[in-house]
Length: 288
Ligand code: ZN
Image (cartoon, rainbow, N blue to C red; front, side, top):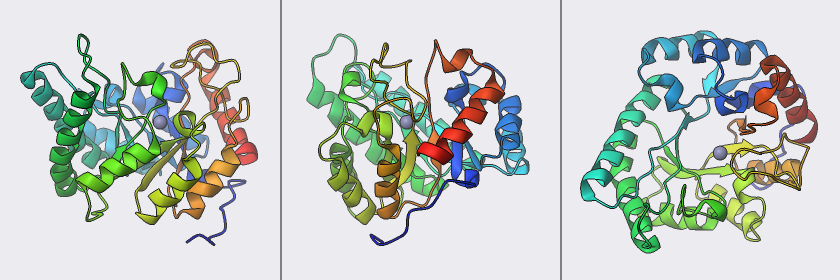
Protein backbone atom coordinates (compact mmCIF):
# COMPACT_ATOMS: atom_id res chain seq x y z
CA UNK A 1 0.00 0.00 0.00
CA UNK A 2 2.74 2.42 0.83
CA UNK A 3 4.02 2.35 -2.74
CA UNK A 4 0.64 3.13 -4.26
CA UNK A 5 0.92 6.09 -6.67
CA UNK A 6 -1.02 9.15 -5.58
CA UNK A 7 -4.09 9.85 -7.69
CA UNK A 8 -4.17 13.00 -9.69
CA UNK A 9 -7.20 15.14 -9.12
CA UNK A 10 -6.57 17.00 -12.36
CA UNK A 11 -9.51 15.99 -14.52
CA UNK A 12 -10.59 13.80 -11.62
CA UNK A 13 -13.55 15.59 -10.10
CA UNK A 14 -15.35 12.26 -9.89
CA UNK A 15 -13.02 11.57 -6.93
CA UNK A 16 -14.19 14.76 -5.26
CA UNK A 17 -17.15 15.52 -3.05
CA UNK A 18 -18.85 18.67 -1.86
CA UNK A 19 -20.01 18.90 1.72
CA UNK A 20 -23.17 20.96 1.45
CA UNK A 21 -22.09 23.22 4.34
CA UNK A 22 -19.60 24.68 1.86
CA UNK A 23 -22.50 26.34 0.07
CA UNK A 24 -23.92 27.87 3.25
CA UNK A 25 -27.18 25.89 3.38
CA UNK A 26 -28.90 28.63 1.42
CA UNK A 27 -31.04 26.38 -0.77
CA UNK A 28 -33.05 23.19 -0.39
CA UNK A 29 -31.05 20.01 -0.81
CA UNK A 30 -32.85 19.04 -4.05
CA UNK A 31 -31.40 22.15 -5.73
CA UNK A 32 -27.97 21.65 -4.19
CA UNK A 33 -27.83 18.06 -5.46
CA UNK A 34 -28.40 19.20 -9.03
CA UNK A 35 -25.85 22.00 -8.78
CA UNK A 36 -23.15 19.69 -7.45
CA UNK A 37 -23.85 17.06 -10.09
CA UNK A 38 -23.89 19.66 -12.86
CA UNK A 39 -20.53 21.02 -11.66
CA UNK A 40 -19.01 17.58 -12.27
CA UNK A 41 -18.35 16.32 -8.74
CA UNK A 42 -18.63 12.62 -7.97
CA UNK A 43 -20.22 12.83 -4.54
CA UNK A 44 -22.03 14.91 -2.00
CA UNK A 45 -22.07 15.01 1.81
CA UNK A 46 -25.44 16.25 3.04
CA UNK A 47 -26.38 17.41 6.54
CA UNK A 48 -29.18 16.08 8.70
CA UNK A 49 -30.86 19.49 8.86
CA UNK A 50 -31.41 19.21 5.09
CA UNK A 51 -32.66 15.64 5.21
CA UNK A 52 -34.65 15.09 8.40
CA UNK A 53 -38.35 15.74 8.06
CA UNK A 54 -38.13 15.16 4.30
CA UNK A 55 -38.76 12.04 2.24
CA UNK A 56 -35.37 10.40 2.73
CA UNK A 57 -36.06 7.73 0.10
CA UNK A 58 -36.83 10.41 -2.46
CA UNK A 59 -33.65 12.32 -1.60
CA UNK A 60 -31.63 9.13 -1.92
CA UNK A 61 -33.19 8.42 -5.30
CA UNK A 62 -32.48 11.93 -6.56
CA UNK A 63 -28.84 11.71 -5.47
CA UNK A 64 -28.45 8.32 -7.16
CA UNK A 65 -30.13 9.47 -10.36
CA UNK A 66 -27.87 12.53 -10.43
CA UNK A 67 -24.96 10.08 -10.52
CA UNK A 68 -23.59 11.15 -7.14
CA UNK A 69 -22.24 9.05 -4.30
CA UNK A 70 -22.65 10.07 -0.67
CA UNK A 71 -19.19 10.48 0.84
CA UNK A 72 -20.58 10.97 4.34
CA UNK A 73 -23.67 11.95 6.29
CA UNK A 74 -23.20 14.90 8.66
CA UNK A 75 -23.30 14.52 11.55
CA UNK A 76 -23.87 12.96 14.95
CA UNK A 77 -25.83 14.56 17.78
CA UNK A 78 -23.37 15.52 20.53
CA UNK A 79 -23.20 12.73 23.06
CA UNK A 80 -22.03 13.89 26.52
CA UNK A 81 -24.81 15.00 28.86
CA UNK A 82 -25.26 15.87 32.52
CA UNK A 83 -28.23 13.55 32.94
CA UNK A 84 -28.58 9.92 31.92
CA UNK A 85 -31.91 10.60 30.22
CA UNK A 86 -30.30 13.22 28.01
CA UNK A 87 -27.37 10.92 27.21
CA UNK A 88 -29.85 8.23 26.14
CA UNK A 89 -31.79 10.71 24.02
CA UNK A 90 -28.56 11.75 22.30
CA UNK A 91 -27.69 8.15 21.49
CA UNK A 92 -31.23 7.56 20.24
CA UNK A 93 -31.02 10.58 17.97
CA UNK A 94 -27.85 9.13 16.47
CA UNK A 95 -29.57 5.80 15.94
CA UNK A 96 -32.27 7.50 13.89
CA UNK A 97 -29.64 9.34 11.85
CA UNK A 98 -27.79 6.10 11.17
CA UNK A 99 -30.95 4.63 9.64
CA UNK A 100 -31.21 7.66 7.35
CA UNK A 101 -27.52 7.33 6.48
CA UNK A 102 -28.25 3.79 5.33
CA UNK A 103 -31.15 4.92 3.15
CA UNK A 104 -28.89 7.56 1.61
CA UNK A 105 -26.21 4.98 0.92
CA UNK A 106 -23.65 7.05 2.85
CA UNK A 107 -20.06 5.79 2.93
CA UNK A 108 -19.93 6.76 6.59
CA UNK A 109 -21.80 8.54 9.37
CA UNK A 110 -19.61 11.42 10.51
CA UNK A 111 -19.32 11.61 14.28
CA UNK A 112 -18.51 14.93 15.89
CA UNK A 113 -18.79 13.64 19.40
CA UNK A 114 -19.61 16.69 21.48
CA UNK A 115 -17.84 18.71 24.16
CA UNK A 116 -18.23 19.03 27.91
CA UNK A 117 -21.85 19.54 28.95
CA UNK A 118 -22.48 23.10 30.15
CA UNK A 119 -22.01 23.20 33.91
CA UNK A 120 -19.55 20.28 34.02
CA UNK A 121 -15.78 20.15 34.45
CA UNK A 122 -15.58 16.41 33.92
CA UNK A 123 -13.55 15.96 30.73
CA UNK A 124 -12.74 12.32 31.47
CA UNK A 125 -16.42 11.65 32.14
CA UNK A 126 -17.44 13.23 28.85
CA UNK A 127 -14.91 11.08 27.02
CA UNK A 128 -16.19 7.98 28.81
CA UNK A 129 -19.73 8.76 27.70
CA UNK A 130 -18.56 9.02 24.11
CA UNK A 131 -16.84 5.63 24.39
CA UNK A 132 -20.01 4.03 25.68
CA UNK A 133 -22.19 5.61 23.02
CA UNK A 134 -19.88 4.70 20.14
CA UNK A 135 -19.64 1.10 21.36
CA UNK A 136 -23.43 0.98 21.46
CA UNK A 137 -23.91 2.62 18.04
CA UNK A 138 -21.36 0.30 16.46
CA UNK A 139 -23.85 -2.59 16.67
CA UNK A 140 -26.39 -0.64 14.66
CA UNK A 141 -23.73 0.60 12.25
CA UNK A 142 -22.93 -3.02 11.42
CA UNK A 143 -26.61 -3.93 11.14
CA UNK A 144 -27.45 -1.12 8.71
CA UNK A 145 -24.11 -1.26 6.88
CA UNK A 146 -22.88 2.29 7.54
CA UNK A 147 -19.47 2.74 9.22
CA UNK A 148 -19.00 5.30 11.99
CA UNK A 149 -16.31 7.87 11.20
CA UNK A 150 -14.96 9.53 14.34
CA UNK A 151 -13.84 13.02 13.40
CA UNK A 152 -11.29 14.50 15.79
CA UNK A 153 -11.71 18.26 16.04
CA UNK A 154 -8.98 20.83 16.65
CA UNK A 155 -8.49 21.22 20.42
CA UNK A 156 -9.90 24.74 20.30
CA UNK A 157 -13.29 22.99 20.20
CA UNK A 158 -12.71 20.68 23.16
CA UNK A 159 -15.14 22.56 25.39
CA UNK A 160 -18.14 22.96 23.16
CA UNK A 161 -17.94 20.58 20.20
CA UNK A 162 -15.61 17.65 20.63
CA UNK A 163 -13.66 16.03 23.43
CA UNK A 164 -11.96 14.00 20.70
CA UNK A 165 -9.10 16.13 19.48
CA UNK A 166 -6.34 14.27 17.69
CA UNK A 167 -6.10 11.52 15.13
CA UNK A 168 -3.97 9.50 17.53
CA UNK A 169 -6.67 9.72 20.19
CA UNK A 170 -9.34 8.70 17.66
CA UNK A 171 -7.31 5.68 16.60
CA UNK A 172 -6.80 4.68 20.21
CA UNK A 173 -10.56 4.77 20.76
CA UNK A 174 -11.17 2.76 17.59
CA UNK A 175 -8.74 0.11 18.79
CA UNK A 176 -10.40 -0.14 22.21
CA UNK A 177 -13.97 -0.16 20.92
CA UNK A 178 -13.42 -2.22 17.78
CA UNK A 179 -10.25 -4.30 18.26
CA UNK A 180 -11.33 -6.80 15.60
CA UNK A 181 -11.22 -4.02 12.96
CA UNK A 182 -14.70 -4.79 11.74
CA UNK A 183 -14.61 -2.13 9.06
CA UNK A 184 -17.44 -0.28 10.78
CA UNK A 185 -15.40 2.04 12.98
CA UNK A 186 -12.81 4.46 11.69
CA UNK A 187 -11.87 8.09 11.36
CA UNK A 188 -12.64 11.14 9.25
CA UNK A 189 -9.43 13.04 8.65
CA UNK A 190 -10.20 16.73 8.26
CA UNK A 191 -7.21 18.82 7.18
CA UNK A 192 -8.55 21.81 9.12
CA UNK A 193 -8.53 19.92 12.40
CA UNK A 194 -5.37 17.86 11.99
CA UNK A 195 -2.81 19.84 9.98
CA UNK A 196 -0.93 21.21 13.02
CA UNK A 197 -0.44 17.83 14.74
CA UNK A 198 3.25 16.78 15.01
CA UNK A 199 2.07 13.14 15.07
CA UNK A 200 0.00 13.49 11.91
CA UNK A 201 2.27 11.66 9.47
CA UNK A 202 2.71 8.70 11.79
CA UNK A 203 -0.98 8.60 12.68
CA UNK A 204 -2.18 8.70 9.07
CA UNK A 205 0.05 5.74 8.30
CA UNK A 206 -1.23 3.94 11.40
CA UNK A 207 -4.83 4.69 10.42
CA UNK A 208 -4.23 3.29 6.96
CA UNK A 209 -2.61 0.15 8.29
CA UNK A 210 -5.64 -0.47 10.49
CA UNK A 211 -7.96 0.30 7.53
CA UNK A 212 -9.64 3.04 9.54
CA UNK A 213 -9.65 5.97 7.10
CA UNK A 214 -13.27 6.50 6.12
CA UNK A 215 -13.27 10.11 4.97
CA UNK A 216 -10.91 12.92 4.03
CA UNK A 217 -12.09 16.53 4.34
CA UNK A 218 -10.28 19.53 2.91
CA UNK A 219 -10.36 23.30 3.21
CA UNK A 220 -7.58 25.61 4.39
CA UNK A 221 -6.52 27.27 7.64
CA UNK A 222 -6.12 30.97 6.92
CA UNK A 223 -2.98 32.50 8.34
CA UNK A 224 -5.03 35.15 10.09
CA UNK A 225 -8.21 33.23 10.91
CA UNK A 226 -10.92 35.54 12.27
CA UNK A 227 -13.33 32.91 13.56
CA UNK A 228 -12.25 29.32 14.19
CA UNK A 229 -15.70 27.99 13.37
CA UNK A 230 -16.89 30.08 10.47
CA UNK A 231 -13.78 31.46 8.76
CA UNK A 232 -12.35 28.41 7.09
CA UNK A 233 -10.36 29.13 3.96
CA UNK A 234 -10.64 27.89 0.41
CA UNK A 235 -7.98 25.34 -0.50
CA UNK A 236 -4.84 27.21 -1.51
CA UNK A 237 -5.61 30.36 0.49
CA UNK A 238 -4.02 29.25 3.76
CA UNK A 239 -1.17 27.38 5.42
CA UNK A 240 -2.00 23.69 4.93
CA UNK A 241 0.06 21.52 2.56
CA UNK A 242 -3.06 19.87 1.17
CA UNK A 243 -1.37 17.98 -1.67
CA UNK A 244 1.16 16.59 0.80
CA UNK A 245 -1.60 15.52 3.17
CA UNK A 246 -3.67 13.92 0.42
CA UNK A 247 -0.66 11.96 -0.75
CA UNK A 248 -0.10 10.72 2.81
CA UNK A 249 -3.74 9.70 3.17
CA UNK A 250 -3.80 7.93 -0.18
CA UNK A 251 -0.43 6.29 0.33
CA UNK A 252 -1.99 4.87 3.49
CA UNK A 253 -4.61 3.19 1.32
CA UNK A 254 -7.52 5.63 1.29
CA UNK A 255 -9.32 5.52 -2.05
CA UNK A 256 -12.50 7.41 -1.16
CA UNK A 257 -13.56 10.93 -2.00
CA UNK A 258 -11.70 14.14 -1.29
CA UNK A 259 -14.47 16.17 0.32
CA UNK A 260 -14.51 19.95 0.41
CA UNK A 261 -15.93 21.30 3.66
CA UNK A 262 -15.75 25.07 4.12
CA UNK A 263 -17.61 27.03 6.76
CA UNK A 264 -17.17 30.66 5.75
CA UNK A 265 -19.93 32.96 6.92
CA UNK A 266 -18.51 36.26 5.72
CA UNK A 267 -16.82 35.14 2.55
CA UNK A 268 -17.69 31.98 0.60
CA UNK A 269 -21.23 31.74 1.97
CA UNK A 270 -21.92 35.17 0.49
CA UNK A 271 -20.73 34.34 -3.01
CA UNK A 272 -22.70 33.01 -5.94
CA UNK A 273 -23.13 29.28 -5.36
CA UNK A 274 -22.13 28.13 -8.83
CA UNK A 275 -19.03 30.34 -8.61
CA UNK A 276 -18.11 28.72 -5.28
CA UNK A 277 -18.42 25.30 -6.90
CA UNK A 278 -16.25 26.42 -9.79
CA UNK A 279 -13.52 27.68 -7.45
CA UNK A 280 -13.72 24.47 -5.39
CA UNK A 281 -13.32 22.40 -8.55
CA UNK A 282 -10.39 24.49 -9.70
CA UNK A 283 -8.56 24.43 -6.36
CA UNK A 284 -9.11 20.70 -5.88
CA UNK A 285 -7.43 20.08 -9.21
CA UNK A 286 -4.60 22.55 -8.79
CA UNK A 287 -3.62 22.71 -5.12
CA UNK A 288 -4.97 19.56 -3.44
ZN1 ZN B 1 -14.86 17.66 8.56
